[in-house]
Image 1 (cartoon, rainbow, N blue to C red):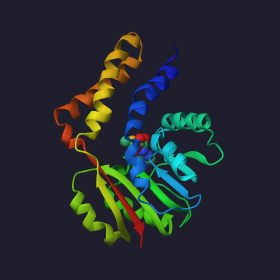
Image 2 (spheres, helix red, strand yellow; image 1 turned 60 degrees about the horizontal axis):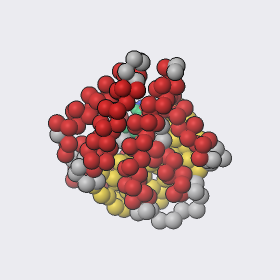
Image 3 (cartoon, helix red, strand yellow; image 1 turned 180 degrees about the vertical axis):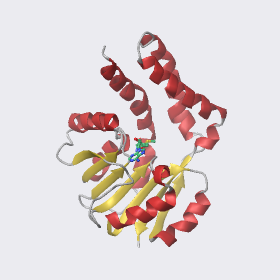
Length: 226
Ligand SMILES: C[S@@+](CC[C@H](N)C(=O)[O-])C[C@H]1O[C@@H](n2cnc3c(N)ncnc32)[C@H](O)[C@@H]1O
């Protein structure tokens, strides 16, 4: 097994497989939007695209997923082809600090787990121009300072449509705990390979979460450009 295919297998065998368990929250947020015919969607920080693929299924729209990490995009490209979405879902390697689509390009901007990179307020401010009039911004972010964020939304030119918090232990019970169990099994399979480093990296992250599972909760914000 070469190291590239080992890493790719691992990525889908661990991250994506368990990340999909949280898709129910992506669906819940999507259902808070009104029906839009074939929406144009920008998925910022799409990674290997678990939410991107879910959005493709839910929306019937055209989606561009952007991310800085080419190997995650390669994985998403593979999924796009496998799922038969090549005609309407594509990826682009691009930093979220340098998004240069024309103004009013998108009906919906989706950002799960990525707005922290630029900061909640700056993200809201800079991404607004990309939305069509009355377009929607959906953000999935860590739960800290929810009430502050809610207060600030109108000052950045959005109306809060809805928001919800994931159950406090959702990340632990639905993602990290089953991931840890799987990693333990995979230690044997990958014991003499480079991939062991990847497993250890994930285990370190899990150990951190384990010390304080409730700190790792998150919330969705559904906003409309006003
Ligand atoms: C926590 S992951 C979320 C991935 C995916 N949205 C999900 O929910 O499964 C954060 C993503 O942000 C991407 N990212 C980090 N810095 C970035 C940047 N400057 N520009 C674009 N993407 C970035 C990472 O590569 C990673 O894929």
